[in-house]
Amino acid sequence: MKKITIILILLISLTNCGVKKTKILEQRKIENLIDSLNYNVILPENWKPILDSHDLLSYSPRNLGDIFYKNIVRIYETKTTEIKEDSLSNLVQEEIKGWHKRVKIVSQNLTRANTKYGETYTYIYEHDWNFTHYKDTFVYFKYNGILYKFNYSSDIRFYEKYKNDVIFILNNLKFKEKE
Image (tube, rainbow, N blue to C red; front, side):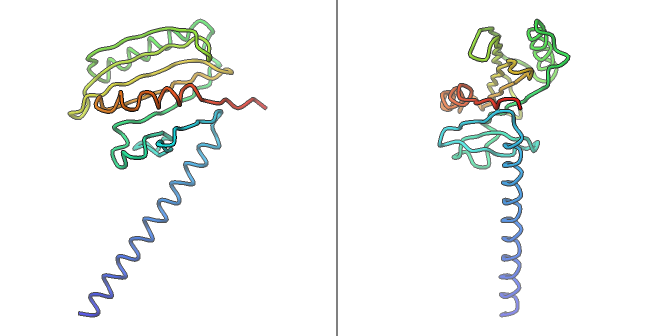
């Protein structure tokens, strides 16, 4: 009986070491990704950087834990060397067509505005995915020759609760100066 107890304790100890090592490696990857960005993200105190299910740097409220994917912010950046000044609108239209091919859109709205980031397009749409109703917001703009696509994807139940936090994140992006 003592041998079984000792073996169980050893197995539990070894398993915990693996989990801690995985968390440390994940945290290092997050830090490296953050360091490689062309901008700094200022988060509300109740949010944290995470690696999403596609291993992409994302941001989610701390209290959601394992269901972080139900309320998440992602920021994509694309070099715009081949995108002409007047083609941001065309690019957004192509993105919207792509979404229509991938998901059944329940409702949508596209707006254009001049913001502190310049010409900015905001595309908001709702769709169902895996028995969950989602509301997604994409904000497109160019800054220093880079196209940014800011995405807020949320289970409809959480959308309004965290909307002001997301606006805070978007409005407080700090771009690094080119060297």
